[in-house]
Length: 268
Image (cartoon, rainbow, N blue to C red):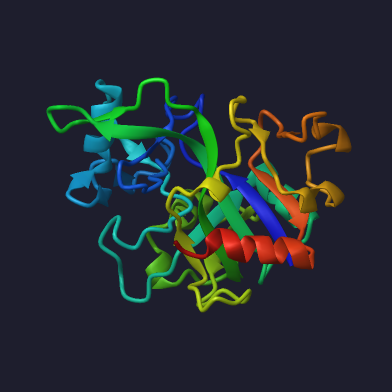
């Protein structure tokens, strides 16, 4: 089994603001803006009684609604879903080539992480970032691969029709894959094959007091090869300096790492 640490959501170039840790502990990963996938706008996506557009506007103050790249698509309640819908994640281009190089396939597990900051309600009831709150990389979701769909040659199931990697412009691209979630997680715990996670201390990758790319990985990762990284990524203080850019970091999951994955995705 392989573990893929997958960077997703708003970052310093796409969206240019951290995704919010909501006051109730929800990690609401904000999908990046796009002009290429005109399927959903931020106004279409819902969390509770608010649209993503409303949430972002409260935090950024000036935000024009537009289309977004809803991927990974993990929250069943975000939009109306067709019968048989399942969580899914798509990848293409160089990032897909990297996954293929390491043989990522059925049974492997993606842990999705992104840039987050704590929020609170101001006296008027509007959302705002907590002043001085740290910028952190946090694991917000997971997906174990159940099947891989190649839109250039495979029929696209009806439930997957609104996924951005099913879009017409990508259908003839041989460097385009969709990873559909397994029904159940094979690691144990009687968990679904994909889901979102709340904020919890052990899901915070960032080393306390350091820039978000410096991670506090368990000691079990010291003996594992993490793609795109050299042994020198480990710092003298024990932190791990992740690369500044890159989307998918692949690790061969030993028994200890598999146990760690199960702990990370298990609630509360």
